Image (cartoon, rainbow, N blue to C red; front, side, top):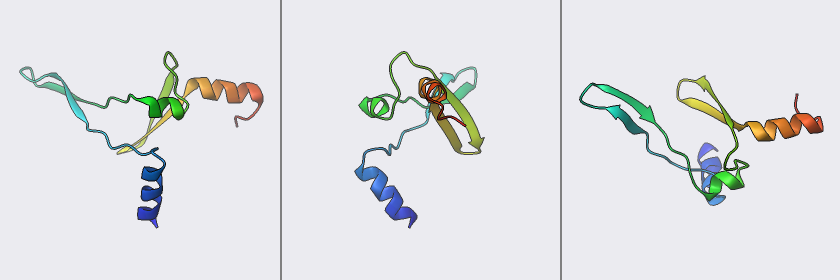
Length: 81
């Protein structure tokens, strides 16, 4: 069931596999993880250049990214909880 769901996401190009990069000063041993998101698929998902996002750590290994612009628009239309 889960494999079918993942295959469906890949078919719709809403699924991306990204590398977690190392960022910082290796000599000083101050390396932090970094994930870069970019591309047309972000705009199709509702994220616009210049907009803001809210990133929430839901649990270890799971993050939620929400467009603050979309949340504001939903609140104005009375769709937000």
